[in-house]
Length: 105
Image (cartoon, rainbow, N blue to C red; front, side, top):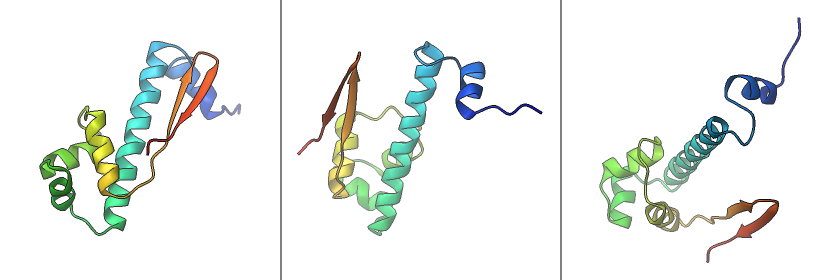
């Protein structure tokens, strides 16, 4: 029986790197990871979704949607959430054969 790597399976069923389908998949995966990170940090700080929402001026439903990747939250809102959680955030931006690391203050 032949075995396949996860990358080979993704290439075959989702599309090769650089295709629209693969880029969409990778972006959605990243958003899921952000939601999970927010939920984990909130729980570590023993905050409810309501309490976190009050800290940044949004309703509990918005926090729930962000944690469950059910919304296209504004970047500004995501930053407010991480700041309220006192979380260090770093962004990695890749520009055609260049790499820049951005670390907001």
